[in-house]
Length: 207
Image (cartoon, rainbow, N blue to C red; front, side, top):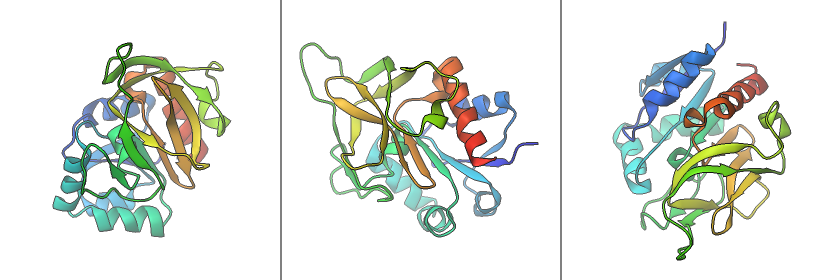
C-alpha cells in the first residue's frame, strides 16, 4: 500500500484532475485543507490554476501558510508544486505586484516575452531539456513532452533548475531544492508521460 498524499485545497482549481491521476496510479490521496490530515500525510501536492496574488491570499485566508512552513521547512516533508503551485514557491510575481510568495526557492516570476510569433499564454505540448535529477524522468524519452498552460514563468537563474523548455525564452520547467519540487507543466494533463513522472517522483520518495 502506498503512503498518504495530501493535495492542498486552497481554492485555486485543478485539484480534481490531480486527484484522479494519483488514484489511477494507486496512491492514497485526499484533497484537503485540514491541518490534521496535512500533518499526517507522507507527501504534499500544491496544485494551482489562476493568479499568483489570489493563491497567496487564499493560503492566508485558510490559515495554511504557517502550517505549510512548518511541514515543509521545519519537518522537511516533500512537496510538489504544479504550475501556479510552482510559481508561488518563489518570492514574487510580475502578475501580482505587492504579493509575496512562499519564498522557499529564490526566484521571481516574470512574464513570457511577447512577440508576433508567439501566443501567450503558452498552451500545449512542449519538449523538456533535462539537465539534472534524471531519476525523475526514468523511463521517459530523452526529451520528453509535457502539457503547459501559463503566461508567467520562474526566472530561476541559480542551481535549482533541473529541466527547461523553450518558448520565446529558455525557461525553467522543473526546479528542485531539497524536499521542494516545482513543475511548470501539468503532469495530470500530460497523459503517459505525466503519470510516469508522478510515479518516478513518489518512488524516489519511497511513498
